[in-house]
Image (cartoon, rainbow over all chains, first blue to last red; front, top):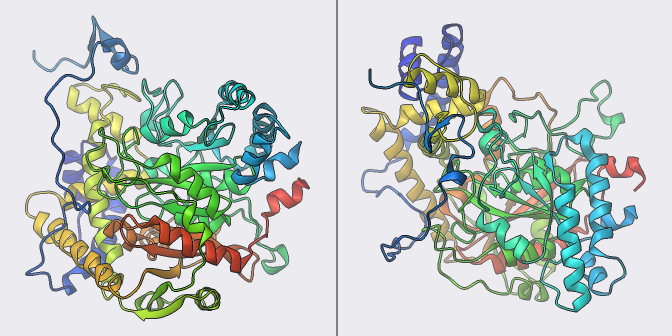
Length: 95
Length: 499
């Protein structure tokens, strides 16, 4: 399916990636080219085929529901671009 | 002392145990080699002080006769493994300044076994690529150059392959004894082939992904890169094993990977998948593949033609599944918890500005594709369809492995290409992984072994794919190929240095 400029702008909004207007046309062409190529999958009959969600033939393991880690607030905040009083700080969300 | 950098892991270990040289001398030689190799841009971060401190600790154990399995062995780490207290970038602008407060399981196991960390190697941004040209830290150069008389007028440097191109270049240039890589669609094997070294992608779930920056979680596999099959086995021995912190890391015993190397290829049934021929393969790669089958036959194995009808659909299925998982995994880069933040008018604006500036072109492309194929109205047509095709790809292999013990294929459809080639055509770049991706979709172990040179004097690899959790047969067949090929060529970077 060919994507137009508006469709790419919408996808970029969903992905929370700012794309300059001037780049949208070129990006639409690139993405359309990739999508046209992956659409060859339509040739494959898959009606009775289950989708593979994991290649590991195993059941997810259960574990005790206990605390195994903690008391490391400073280590967690150490890489944050901005912190305040022991929290991550972000631009104001609620007026 | 430069001869210390040409040693295999096996030889370095023997030398250390016999105390012909110290771990410190070995580390110093490799630190110097790492500095000499800076023109290749293989490392993003060098950690010489840490290397020498780790080497001294190894020397103390060696002196006490308490040597660990990899004591004193200098290793390079792909910069996608979190290393405590050492910058970890995934070659992305968006991880600017990120210094993990924890260590990945695989690297922790290497250090616990006595290995010495030289530094963090360059890669395609977030491991998305086949050329190591999409790094925020610049492209990596392959230590191999074409014979100049074959390409008059074209003296452009070559890519090392990707995404583990920094690791491959460092090992090929003798600027590390071995390295870690990760392989999501061929990112260990294809650069190994391009750089004339051995690269092993283990079974999905054999090595823990804990602490590895995620690209596509159902496909990502950490694994070793080295200059011999035995060295790769020795590294895998330490890297592999169950980890409760990765719920997909299999709770199965790790066998002795050196044991299969003591056996020859006699009695092995080797599948030759006929569909791998159908992609316009260069004659020299077809010839090398046939040579590989002949070598294995001469070693007592029996090549058998097999069919993997879904082969041509593996690549497009991958380019739906991997971007879908990437778009989800990379949602965490939002300018809040670590890395780059670009200020915005609101929280949403800050996210968009940060991600718009922080992601490079290829990462952005894949996140957008992934977002699209997962979005309402398109999920079934793209993502669900690709997951079904993935089931069929895995069934192809299961059927083949009822008849054969492993498969032999070329690793890549070409030798290393020039930096800049395929830049404007993403699909042409994706085709590099046509022979490696099927094993990722099916979660199977596979190795690339250097097998010969092309007409330009550049290395070409052959690939052996095995059953899930049967790295032993992969190593055994790979070892037989290695012995028959007797690949002793060295890259011009080393020959030129006279070292």
